[in-house]
Structure formats: structure tokens, C-alpha cells
Length: 326
Image (cartoon, rainbow, N blue to C red):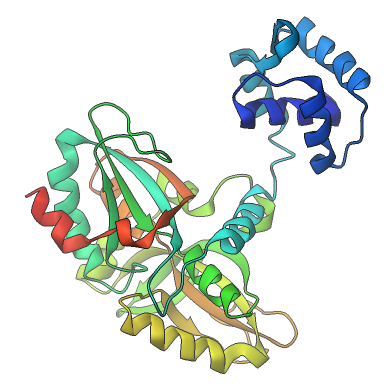
């Protein structure tokens, strides 16, 4: 499966509709591939023969289920770095304004079976009253919306993703680099060290999802006893922006946001993690800590991190949402 065939499958998969060779030829340019319609038709014929696409007369092609599976398998290596690209794209696309509390911020999306939802809210209540969340607002959906499909007999919960911090700083002209997602050990209620780290630009999956699935957290222990393991990430900002970031974070706190656990010192390691020249490290809580607590309590979840942009005004205060499911 060469790059051109993969790119065509990606286009068909993303469009999820019948499109012709002319449109595919235009969209291939976004992938850095310049092909004539005739050459595109040649490649489409190869995909047809392999059963990866289906012809709909002169209308064009549509990807088959076999094509989707082939795309998923063939592009795994190519997806390395996918998460960091997603972080950067959604940070740019978010139009959330911290001062007016208007616009779209970034959410993690989790599905929980409706039979477990009361227990789930009871567990999450402890987390939302701790320092280990980005904010108290959540999205609750019991049926499909334009952007989110809710499986039958499930409830969708959207938690504020920590990448929202990136978006807020980017709108203020401050570049921020997401370096690692990790499991942060808490001792005596304070960050102690990272027990595990995964580089955002070296993975095709969100690191925090991996740690949740691996049962590597103890969020409840960190909250109740001051000793445990939470989800967190390590980021860098330019030294010249440090004071401005602290100013913005004070505004965030006044507006009901949390997130930053620690600021480092210029050009100094933070919790033994080195930083780049003229940079400062910061430690940010993972937006999926409430979901990690659910898994710790054997409540099965289906989660997609850094999932969607959603209007802030559509979110509910967690305590109000909790009352609904008591």
C-alpha cells in the first residue's frame, strides 16, 4: 500500500460519501500529491480490484469496510505523531475566550452504560472536588447531536481536555509545547515524580488513554490519602512568557478553571525532566482523571481523548449534572 493509495483511502474515509476522481484529485494536493484525474482513476481501479473501494457509476467511489480496515492497519506507523498534530490543530481551531467564557473549547468524550451512571457520578464527585481536573464543567448527552453520536443505552460525558490550556495560551500569542503525557506520583498531596511518560510526538494513541487502560492510576488514593498516581502532562513555554502565563492562569482560576500543578524555573529541570534552552517546564493535570477513577472502580468506559470542539455555554456544572442522576 503506497502513499498515494493510502491518501486516496484517507480522503474517502474522511468524506464518508461518494466522490469522484476530480474531487479526489483536488483533495490529494492537501496531502502533497499532484495527480491528474486520469491518474487518480488508475489508482482507484487498483483499489476497486482489491475490494477497498466500491464504484457507483459516474458518481464516483466510496470506501468499503475492508478499505477502512486496510487503512487502519496500513497507516499505523504513519500515525506516529498523530496525537501531537491533533493537539496543535484543535488548539488553533478553538475559539474559546477565557475572559468572556464564550466559544468552543476542547473536550474528551466518554461513554458509560446507563446502568452504571449513578455510581459513576458518585465516584467522579470526589475527583471534581479535587485539584486534579481542568474545571467543573461537563457535557452530558443522552441522545445524538450533530457532532456526537451516543450509543444505545449509554450516556455521553464530556470532560474539559487539558489541551484547552494550549488553546487559551495560543490565543494570547504564547506558544506552548506538549512534550509528554504521564502518570504522576503524588506524595503528601504534592507532585513527586513521573512514574511513566510517553512522548506526544512519538505515539499514534493518546498516552493518557494508554495509562487508563493499563490500570496504572490511583486517582482516588491521591485524593483521599494524599498518596497516589494521577494523569498529568509535561509542557514547555518560553522563558519570556512565564509571567504572562501566570497572569492568564490567575484569570483562569477566577473563571473556574484549574489545571496547572507546578511551574518550573527557567532552564531548570522540573521533577527531573530537562527542558529546552530558554524554556520553562509546567505540569498540567490530565482531563481524564475523572475517567481514570471510574476504571479504578471497575466501571467500564469507552473514551476518546482530545475528541471534539464544543460550545462552552452547552456545558453544565458538574454538581448540577450530578443532581440529575442521583
